Amino acid sequence: MLRTLSFICLAFGATAASAQDFPVTVEHAFGETIIEERPERVASVGWANHEVPLALGIVPVGFARASWGDDDGDGLLPWVIEKLDELDAEVPTLFDEGDGIDFEAVASTQPDVILAAYSGLSQSEYETLSRIAPVIAYPEAAWTTTWREMIRQNAAGLGMAEEGDAMVAEIEERIATAREEYPELAGKTGMFVTHLDPRDLSTIGFYAAADQRVQFLTDIGMATPQAVREASEAGKYSGRVSAERIDLFEDVDVVVTYGDQARLDELAKNPLIARFPAVARGSVVLLANDPMGTAANPTPLSIDYVLDDYLARLSAAATRGE
Image (tube, rainbow, N blue to C red; front, side, top):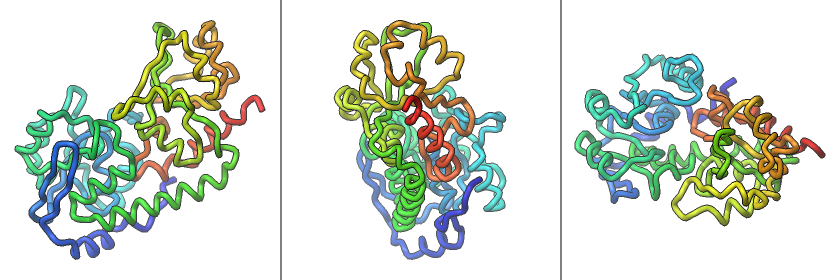
């Protein structure tokens, strides 16, 4: 069940935001964007950027259709539906980003600002979007924006920096409270494997220390394995090592990955994977293509929706075999 946090309030957002002076300047990886006056029509591209204005009581005119975790095919995740219902809002235009950004669809919504703090924008995509409206891009590198940075960066583009800070503080408090229920996770090492494909086990791919999936494990009290830290290149959200070096992951307590039990059972028969202690003892959290499957990639509205279930799964995996 989605709890209603105090920052998710239209009246609060509208009243507090009115004190913000314009223009505002937001710095990002491509330079800086100046928002001359309060944006009324807000669009977003990339993953979950629309959740920031929604959490602040602003209904975007358009945002990216959910491509992962949407188990009913309507392009919306359940916490977004609940928030739209709470705001008594119709479903905005949904951009299909299956083949990249649909610039024409974005332009058709006539936005005053485009939020993209968590995205993979290229320089050319940023420039094209900027011809439509001012763009709030990621602070440093593609797909390495943390949920905190996503909130603060996008909120700044709305002229609601203080509200963004308040949102971050309240989510942090919620996470801290949940952590207290699972003290066994403290200090356990967690590794997020990008995929374990039985058809290709020549390398092991994983999300790097800069990726927010890994940072979220840190948020809930877990540690990053040494091999993941060492193999994480600056500015990269993923890494890869030869499967022959799987012994590097002996200190991994819990593996999180996408897939099902049948695939995991098949993988466990492989002699190389059998040398992966966490997999051998079943200390694996499997995430499917459903709303819960988005748990590892936290967003402003999803954290509260999935946090308890995610922590319970991690706890079960961390204590398996003890």
